[in-house]
Amino acid sequence: MLKEVCDFDFIFRAGVWKPRTSPSSFQGAGTEALQWLQEVKQQFGMEIATEVATPAHVTEALQAGIDYLWIGARTSANPIAVQEIADALLTTRSETYRGGQLKGIFIKNPVNEDAALWLGNIERLEKTGIPVMAIHRGCAHKPCWAMAHYIRTQRPDIPILLDPSHMSGDATKIPSLMKKIDELQLDGAMIEVHYNPQEALSDAQQQIKPEEIGKFSVVSGQRSVENQELAWLRAEIDELDDQLWETIARRMEVSERIGEWKKAHGVQALQPQRYEEIVKQRKEWAEQKGLSEELVQNLFDAIHQESLKKQK
Image (cartoon, rainbow, N blue to C red; front, side):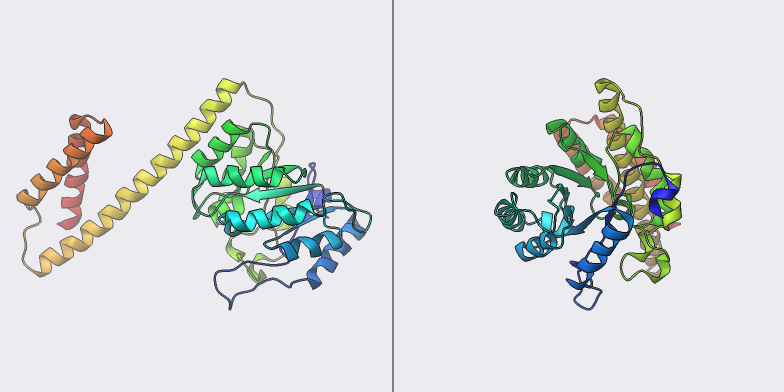
């Protein structure tokens, strides 16, 4: 069905073991689900992939003829766990299971923005001799483009796929994120799909229906190295701008609550001494960061005036 709705290659992936925050949430169907993946492979001729978090998972997945493995963000945050998986792969890399052989392993970025750790995990896995590909899923529903930019700069030979589902946590944002594949010259996408997202046992809010995949395309023309670098830098700027305005918006919400408190206690909205102390601190901070006093003064004045409006 999936191959009928779009014109690019597919790997069918499904989490058999689901590392979850709460033990009461869905943890995956376990080993039994490996049989379901085998059925997909046999009936539709699609390559299959599943997530592994332990050496035992690796053994079971290979015995089931899984074509690709992926290491999730939680496991990627633990270099000891990644090394244990790499060691398990080293002992089996030359062995064949059920007529198939492992074709590659995907490694997601850690849950926290740690580019060096992500690169170290890639290097650990490369020692197995199995092709390694990076999955950029962002961190805490933020793109963290600087982290992926670092990997692309350090290792341009490593394919990088985008995970817009986890990056956004919102299915409605997936189309706009998919455009980044062309802008940043990424190599594909890992997208969460469910025939009825509302009934999904995990991450229902970030899943799309199978027929929606046909709207996307991961085929793009090549850019010059200079233009590609500029695209990455602009992505970083856009993300920082988003964070800046989100922070200002949250600050205004707190200012509004301060205004309510001041009104309830008969306190004037403008507190000159407090304002002068903050301006002094910000100017000292600006000097340490190499920013001009004029820039800091103008920005803070504008923010402060808006805060006073909220408080009044």
